[in-house]
Length: 390
Ligand code: SF4
Image (tube, rainbow, N blue to C red; front, side, top):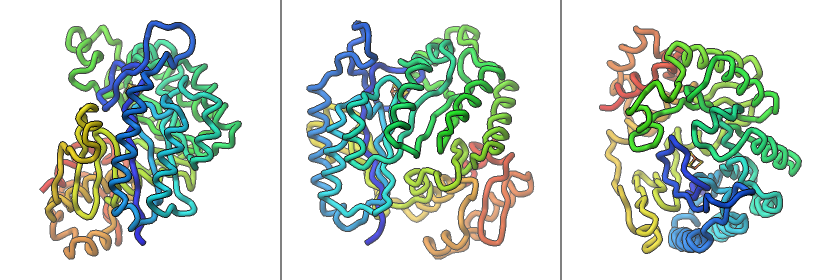
């Protein structure tokens, strides 16, 4: 039986961060003092999980043909919902398919939303990798981003997970953010590394149209106090060097891991392996077909897994584009023999021109078996990857 990855989308957050354009809705009252988890809307959450369970049940005939090798609970804030829901979804998946013995089961968490009493449910369900959104250790930067948590909240979450025996922990950081300086970025990175997570993701802030941060920038760019381009470049350079020095291998444009801890779920996605996504807005790539559930929560819940925003059989050209576009994000790039096996053609025959152009500029490199971006190419990846769309 072939391997399969499963993605589960949990579209709930305490409140919206100022830069967020992910599919998530705020489900907490913001007027109660004390805990960060303020009175979440449990009736909405429970109705959503009913829909999610129905969608997973209806995928039973597909699931039972595979061994599940990775599961990823993304969001949103999966740690915001009652932990028993996460455990039950994992139980349902186990009833529907075999799990690989070493299956990687990841869950995203936001600091301040992990309840200590939830940890046994996560462990019983089999969660063995947690990704925590820290972004920065500086209160001023966190608050400008609209994050709900403080650095202290993060330390508590991280400490609880470590004491419970979670060894595979990722920390998400963000650069290019309001008030950031070289010094503050260095401090964030060094503090995160001092906690010895197994994995670090470092993303750049993108101002997405429609978000409050974008609107504020449109109204007055200076008001955001963003670092200038040179500062961001220096921060990126320092980040790469420091993380390599500290034993974190960069294996994708924004992802670094200690040996043996690269995220297998994401690697399978970048390798264009089959995955099924469940939940509002979740995408699947399965037997050459790409399908994305509707993003609208009400529509999703009224016919879970049936209403789609996109549902198409990929053409050979689209499959090749996806293979190159995603594969080149990895520092090891794409395998020439894998391309030959999948498409019955030589990579050079299809992409010879684009590859030659960027090799001449020192942005791509070719070994006997792989085509990959050079360090400089990784910095300019957006420009290069678009040349691999046919
Ligand atoms: S925690 Fe993540 S998903 Fe939730 S609002 Fe913030 S950025 Fe969006």
